[in-house]
Length: 45
Image (cartoon, rainbow, N blue to C red; front, side, top):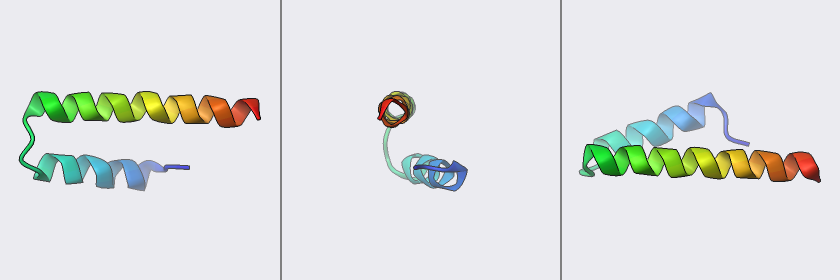
């Protein structure tokens, strides 16, 4: 599972890319929803 260090790395990677702020926010939102989905799926197993 992802931990805080992985999240910080991903956030830093996105902020250092040439993406717009809205693209970064959208990407982080999608990643957060996907992580919640995976956490729930693993919990149900």
